[in-house]
Amino acid sequence: MHIRDLPRLKSHKSAQVSTHTHDFPHHKRRNVHHQDWVKIEPGAKYTFPKIEGPATISCIWMTILEGVATSIREAVRQNMIWKVLRYNRLQCLRDVLVKIYFDDENTPSVSSPMGDFFGVGFGKYVHYHSAFIGMTSGGYFCHFPMPFSRNCRIEIENTSKETPVTFYGAVTYERHEKPEEGMAYFHAAYKREVETMEGAPYMILQTDGKGHYVGCVLSMQGKRKRHHFGFLEGNPKIFVDSEAEPSLEYTGTEDYFMGGWYFNKGTFYAPYHGLTIKNWRKFRISAYRFHPEGIPFNSSIKVIIHHGEFDEICGDYSSVAYWYQE
Image 1: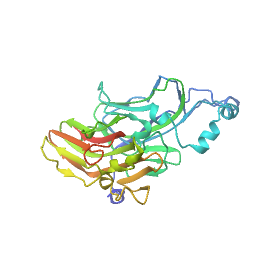
Image 2: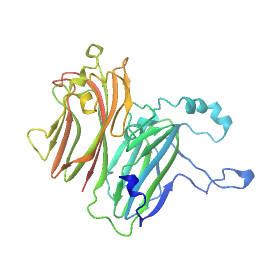
Image 3: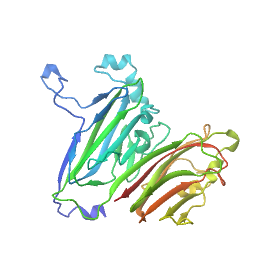
Image 4: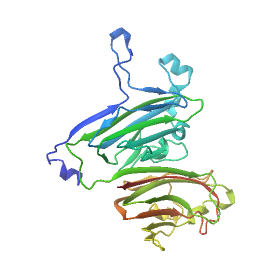
C-alpha cells in the first residue's frame, strides 16, 4: 500500500522538532554554537518545542544513555564508552517516561517507560523492529500515526533519584491546512503488577468510548521456579462493548503472540508480532502483537490475560496497550 502511494502528490508540509539547538557553544575553536543532546537531571523533564496543529506525527526517534559527559576524558572516567559499546541493560529505560499530550489536555494520551513504549520490557535493549515500533542499532523509533487538531506536547521525564541521562530525540510531523475528518487520537498506557493476584486476570486495557484497539507489548516473569513457564497457559480475552462473553479468546499466551509450545524456537521478530526476550534462567518473556486492521469498539473495550490456566500462577506482569479513540 505504501509503495503504491509513493507517486501520489501530497499537500502537507513536513516539519520537525528535536533536541538539536544552536544556542550552546559546543565547538569554540570553530565558533560554532550547536548541541544535539540534552541533559535531563534526576527528577527533571525535557519538553520538546510545542507542535502546532492541525498536524500528524509520522515518526518519533530517540536514543538515551545513563550519565552525561562533555568530553572524551569525562566519558572514559564515567565508563560511558563501555556503556555505549555494551548497550544492553539500562535502568533509564524503566526510569525515563515518555508522555504525549494532545490539544491542551491535562492527562497524557501516552504515558509509558521509554523501553516498554518502544517494545521491550525489563529495562532491556534488544535489537529488533516491527512495522510500528522498534530498537535498531542503538536507536528507538515509533511509526504510529498521531493526528491532532490544535497542538501536541511531548515530555521526557527522568524519574530516577540519582542518575542524570543524556537524551537525543527528533519528532517528524506533517502540517495540514485543516483537521482530517474521521481521525481518532493515539493512546498508549503502561501498567504493571509486581505480583499478579491469584484468581484474577491481568488487565492490559480497559477504557470507555469509541475507537479501536491496535495491540500491546507484554512482559512477564514467573515468581516461582517450580512453575517454569506455566504462566503461559493463560488465555488472552478481548471483550467489546460490555459483552458477557469475549469476542476473541486465544488458546494460550504464546498463541496470541503467534507462537506455540511455550515459544519453543526462541526469540524472533516480524512486522506485527514477535518475541524479544525469552530468558530460561529468570523465566522472563517479552513479546508484542499488533492488529493492523484494528479491533473496533463503540462504547468500551476490555483486554485481559490469565496467568496460568486459572490465574493460579504468580508473576510479575507489565504491559503497554496501544489504541485509537475519539
